[in-house]
Image (cartoon, rainbow, N blue to C red; front, side, top):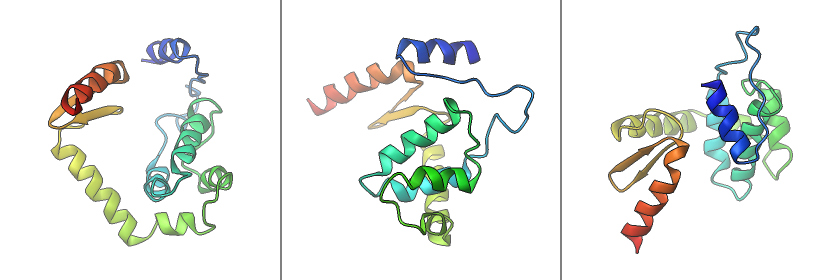
Length: 140
């Protein structure tokens, strides 16, 4: 798996830092708070940038994205509200994420990245081109 990730990163010219095998906290990381914050952030123009920064923080810089301080620092690069973590931890947002995960399971999504175009499921970033072709055929 790690070698495959290294090859894919190299193919797309992306940096990649393999998690420390001697640190059991380094992989997999608890990404629940990051997911909750992303759900709030993606409603804002800066949300995509924040999400990219979270991925780079973990996979390039080797940072612990389970730590609120790391996520707050990443959000501070944007016009994120000071109470972003509070919003992310609100009962309503927690329920929203739970429903999103349930919907993904109902649609057959089982990993990341997964893409759905209509009722068709495409799994893996090596299927992105096929998903885009399928979408183009449907949309015309």
